[in-house]
Image (cartoon, rainbow, N blue to C red; front, side, top):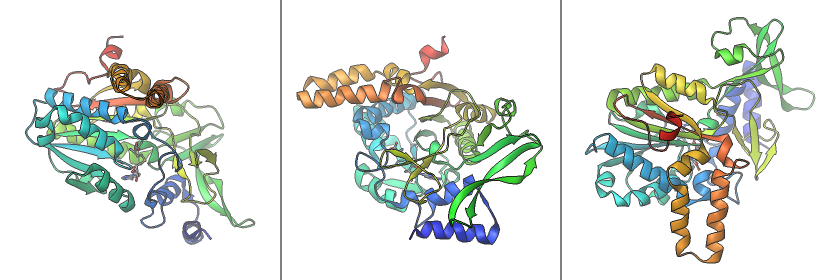
Length: 364
Ligand code: SAH
């Protein structure tokens, strides 16, 4: 019996249908039964594989990106290196190893991780092997100049969905099918007549279209941007989603590297949705930050020197290792793999020049 399913069904029985955001938040983040409480959803034996788990090169390049940004910030003697949703801690461990070329950076860096999963905090502690302060929420971060990193964090934040009907937008809710005792989708009978909360591209959507909003993601980004404006620094968001806001249903569940029904067996599969980079960038700009991108991940990594790094790694490697490096390079940059769908978006205090890796795009 799925205890989390029973819990969600009890909430629906007591309070009525719940929004997709409530369902997603409970399924991923419930403090004891949620998906991320499982120690190891990542990697070949888990449900999905992320860029830092594909290759050490990903975290290393982000480490060097951070060192460069820190120098651009005037090498503050004390700053916060903050990762949101660090998963197994692999990216941070690789970044810190690459940053050994800059001992002054390592000395100035105070590590802060935003992570709600107690199980993953344990893994992060072991993998990173350095003093770390954890936070449940970005609102709790200390007032220091900052470098923020978020890889595949925003896609895990709860979204709401709305469908356009002749009388307005109806929210897509999760309810209980009393015949089957299974969860199912149902449209809220009440139409949202005022669609000013939607970006223009969603307001223009066709009849029947689905629009997604991620209020939690916008709130987190607003908080990060306000932090950068107040205390200085830069941020890097890497995730998957289109460059421009567009209607469509991108809610998905993945278990054991396969798509599955997101309402079946809650807590057993990873739930994500596309990240709306255009809205994130607009939110950062409204808070007073400058932004670079979004740029396809492949292009971003190549401009940071991925090809050279791969060549260097391959020099003293065995044929099998060389093949693994070649395959990782392809997965991270290939247009049919992570290279195109994934995007990088950078944030910076207005005193900082264009972020490393984005220079060419800004001169287009
Ligand atoms: N960045 C990692 C892991 C991505 S999975 C990688 O690239 O491999 C998403 C991560 O975000 C997990 O660590 C998960 O526990 C964390 N997370 C999800 N929702 C969160 C929230 N609302 N607040 C803080 N952390 C969250």
